[in-house]
Length: 341
Ligand SMILES: Nc1ncnc2c1ncn2[C@@H]1O[C@H](COP(=O)(O)OP(=O)(O)O)[C@@H](O)[C@H]1O
Ligand SMILES: [Mg+2]
Image (cartoon, rainbow, N blue to C red):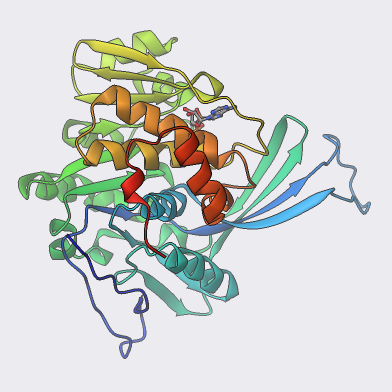
């Protein structure tokens, strides 16, 4: 099926801007968009009131939801992204990057005049890093921004960064129930809870989730268990498919009583920013095309590894020749999915 994408018309709080929702997408993601400002080569101890020099700097499209939308679209999945960007230069850069990936932005909203897009400043100190985020309009999106007919026209709905989507929380259980009734499958990557509470709306959403995509730390906290194995034992009766991302060790997948481990792809990496979100892109791209859990996890490991080869979560995917060569080299299961540019 050929899908004609509307690349140019974002929604805006200015009423004169066109709405042009498109139908029949494989996947819609609703979530935050921000930019990452990444500085490399800093000492761990940064003295106050001194000028400190980094060895390198990159500005990349950041945020879990936007990275997934960007990268899965470049894997040839027809994806829509509903988000709020601020009315500023950072918002314009972020939306331009997304547009280049061909994601459908017909339901993306530019917030009111003078609002600011979120930004994350990442300070790399050798193996560890500091992550400082200004959320901007990130908390402003509510379920009133989500058009049910648009969402219902897709096969699958994904939510990332649950604990950053504060404005959505009140409406989410009803929204998830509604989408399930319309026949969509649902996936969730909570990412971290900055308050480390792991409660609130999460428990109400789990009964609707088809695919949960945590990392090892997150699943232990969600299930309130000490080990990944105990957490999987606790959650698997409630969630049909759980995919645990284990960094350089790959992924563990639990589907019913079946539990498999799928090893990672070995790489010499630049950074792991967005690796989990890009794993989600590869996993969902394969799973939505009907691949089994082993093939889907392998696909996630390939795309997760690819994302580590360049700065941030999207630069490796923006480099079309690197992306194509890496996917081919590791036999990404759907080579025909490459978009025709
Ligand atoms: N050092 C690495 N080498 C190879 N693959 C990696 C590496 N780090 C991450 N990945 C890939 O990215 C996926 C997600 O990384 P992880 O750090 O577990 O998630 P998150 O970013 O959500 O914390 C892993 O499951 C793996 O496929
Ligand atoms: Mg993650």
